[in-house]
View 1: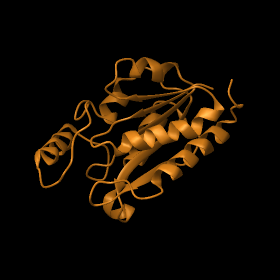
View 2 (view 1 turned 90 degrees about the vertical axis):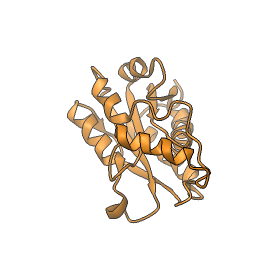
View 3 (view 1 turned 30 degrees about the vertical axis):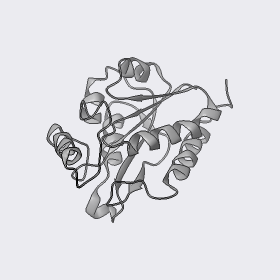
View 4 (view 1 turned 90 degrees about the horizontal axis):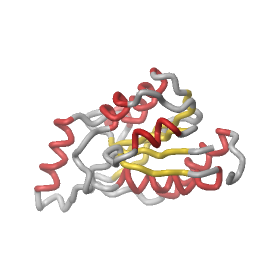
Length: 179
């Protein structure tokens, strides 16, 4: 089983979660972790058996060009103490999924979102999962949200939970251990 974990990240939290998910998946076969803006991300995703996609929740769903530009302005505000990832604001998950010619048969979706009730925050993962399913992929595990504080820091224990979620996806795929 070859898995690709693809992410969009503004301030680093989604990248950290993607890396932890990949660690959890690693005992089930080769895993590649790539940003949607990395050269080769599309080719890697289209050739994988399992595609795990995640991004930050912006305005109850997936980022848009305007919300990514807003992230840039947050990073330029010295009172917020934020810095953008090197590839941000770049292409978002929404546009990246639209660019895929094919998707792997199996998928899973995750997001990072504010640590408030989902009804108030929304969840990008449900939108990601819906888009991948529309293109013919099958979700192998329920979508997950990993929580970020109002200071834009991952809540304690979220990376551990992300590793466990990745391992659960590996178990759900029925993949044999390494190889």
